[in-house]
Image 1 (spheres, rainbow, N blue to C red):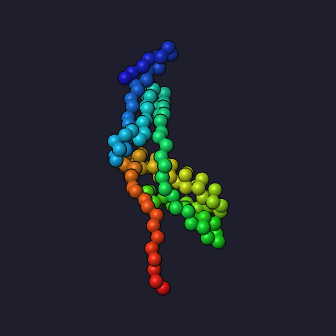
Image 2 (cartoon, one colour):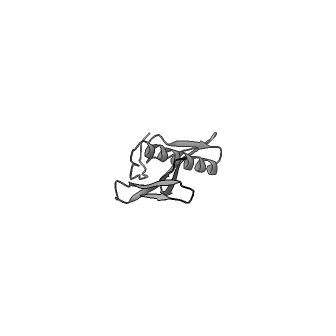
Image 3 (tube, helix red, strand yellow):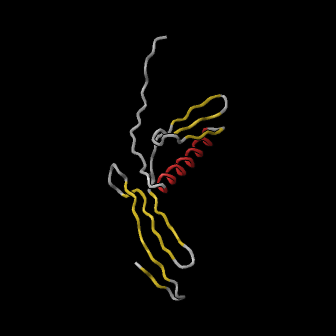
Amino acid sequence: MQFSFSEGAVFDFSCIAVFDPVHFAPLHKFSFAISSARPIMAEDMKNLTLPIVIEADKDGFFVSCPTLQGCYSQGETYEEAVENIKDAIKLHITDRLADGEEIPQVSVSLSTVEIAV
């Protein structure tokens, strides 16, 4: 699609949808408008709910997102750790999408085991 504006600027408009591989629903929708001056990109994002694991020790809090292998952070307080993992998750997902990778849909469960010592 192409649009022209009063000052002679011409914009090519395209839309790309990135789909959730499990539910076949749009996960992200990117809209692009490219002018001769500079590209413009807008992103319509969906909210994701992901599990996180928070561990406390004497030095603060360590937090990871088991769904996204290698995605972890830390904080001096519980609240700081949660905010930091949110940032890490956003960066992790943005990087995966930029590389054309899918966002994994992994089921995580919490269980206990009994061990004799």
